[in-house]
Length: 258
Ligand SMILES: Nc1ncnc2c1ncn2[C@@H]1O[C@H](COP(=O)(O)OP(=O)(O)OP(=O)(O)O)[C@@H](O)[C@H]1O
Image (cartoon, rainbow, N blue to C red; front, side, top):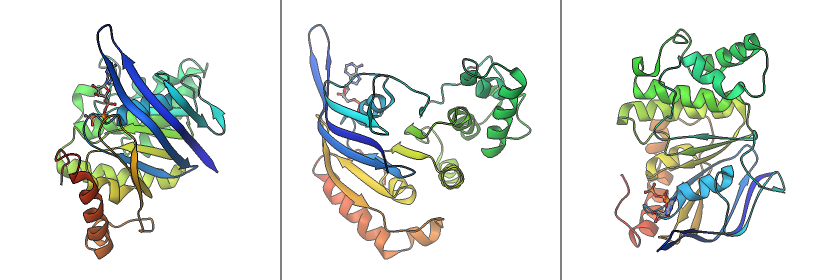
């Protein structure tokens, strides 16, 4: 089943003096329970597309359908994970994860029970009473992921979620994310600048051309899950895929991390 269908989407930002065409003619299909990454040069509209999928901003052309129905705005079937975490600094870990439940779950005890379950799922049991400033970047992003999962969305929209983390933490978080994805069966759309990260995590990679962004090519990743990082990186198919993606990107940009 298809979770998200991006059908001929264009998006322009119109300012008082300037118009920016961010996306043009984007077609993309994300299967239910799938893990698809979006790769492309800086400014090609990856974040714009993710925001359109979330319904935070409207498309200018075409249509995005979720579960077959056109998107009209944000919905509880989708949750966004930000690069800069966006936690509420005055709230504890528990308070941050219960926050999105406040509009829908009236019982405080029930909200806390749901939040605790997700805090445990992301490996932060015991840190419920900590505030964000007492946590490392990786731990803060675990809270961001727990907060997104707490509303039980079908789809996680992740915008360079590990971009602000150091290399070692980033690798740990990639492994954690795959574990959580396999456990929960969520559909994930993942924006990244890293070719290696996209290959390690995804089933499929959509590579975008420069602005106005459109899908230049899609690559299937041949590795079965659960994935072992060393085995994947040491596989000749990894090197071949990496080479093919880089070759496509080099025409557009040198802004990708190795
Ligand atoms: N609110 C906005 N108003 C006007 N222009 C915008 C707005 N948001 C994004 N843009 C422009 O749209 C284009 C696409 O931006 P977007 O952030 O979606 O790209 P991106 O591929 O996610 O970039 P990066 O990889 O650097 O994060 C850019 O030229 C950007 O300047």
